[in-house]
Length: 315
Image 1 (cartoon, one colour):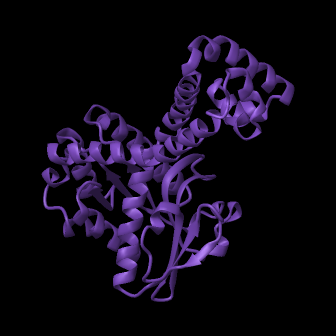
Image 2: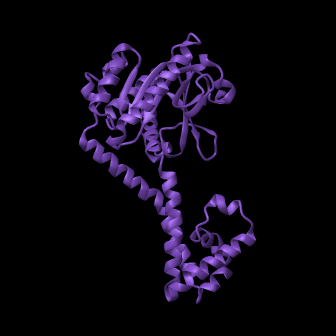
Image 3: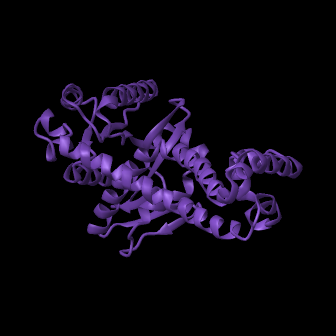
């Protein structure tokens, strides 16, 4: 019963008000971090646009053509799906309807509208930022456990989609990591995130497989015996959504258990959540005692996450 290493009662799972506040602050800081490139782009746009003495001259500044489209409300997808002649018409209409009425302040109007569209784009990418932050926390805990025990590991780079050997100089690699693999006591384990497993037919937050990195492919996902453990990871910090997150996680875990039981298999199941309220903690604790869940941790408690990470590494 690995969970007893860091939990003694259901109350240990409950997220405190201080931890909830800290979680909201972390999300706000991440939003600011991800908004920085847009702010710098807006500054560059302003400098370039100031070369125009009149709004109509903006169309002649080739390097800001894409930015003009953005300010006109075109998303990256819309830009790719439309022809250049449509772009020019849209920019001309934008200039006529919004920039010319702004008079001498047309550059400021252009920048504001550019940021408005960029902000909407950022909002879309931020919807799952809590989940990404949760993955980073778990990955950092696992990497720390591996490094401490001098366990050889590799990590999959999101940008290049290549496996890279882990080193002691591993600062911030969790920012661009989408999978981890390690070898311990002649056992090779690979942890992947957000994959649809054929036997279950649904997306699963965390999947631990018995296979080397080069076997992480769709064909492997069709071999139920390759799976050792599955986990649900919920990074949302708003208490109002806690019960819904747990309900979603329970449904997913039950689906996994049933699907693998039909194949005479019983992989370990675990849950990690950022916001856990009283009633939810009680249900999780009961499932731990019953053996339905093999482990659980509150994401806002570093010691609990570290303990669960050690357990994963040892599976």
